[in-house]
Image (cartoon, rainbow, N blue to C red; front, side, top):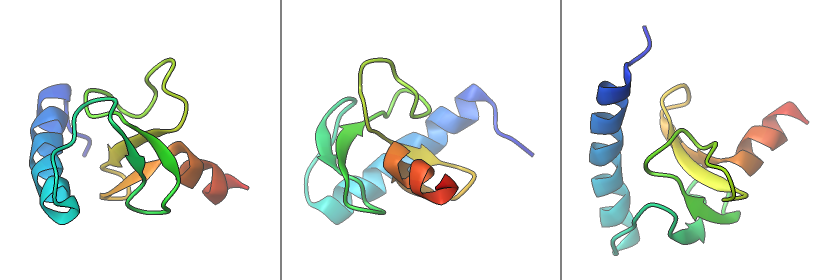
Length: 79
């Protein structure tokens, strides 16, 4: 079963808190940083699903994989 928009936003807020704790600092939408999964440089897409226009390599929370990942992670899985 897939979550609706409100459920996804609630889940992401919870996951952001855990990610901030593990990183030791706060993160905000479009902050630059490295992907927790692969280490590639990108920008956090906390308000979307990783497809934000103009961001380039979006770092987003995937409910499919239950992890933070980025567009580079997605590409590497297909290549």
